[in-house]
Image (spheres, rainbow, N blue to C red):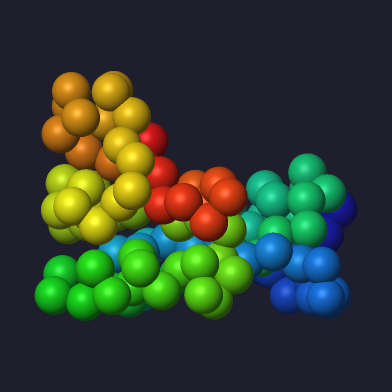
Length: 113
């Protein structure tokens, strides 16, 4: 079996999609490393990147995702609650709890779930 860290650095192709984790801070979080291992083992052609996004830059970062081709992001604190005004859609469940955990991009629409 490969060492988990060897699974992080796999070849990227023109069809590799990028997903992300937005947090502040985020460098200490093992989420990206662990999730990338799971994506690789599942055979998904996705690359997960951790992005340190400060609270004052969240709107710009969220609105820039479609232009960059990033297909989705997971959100950590402090962004789970403050992201809703920047989204085109928010599920009823997310509104009820007052937080969004991830933002998939569907048909170039920013949706929160």
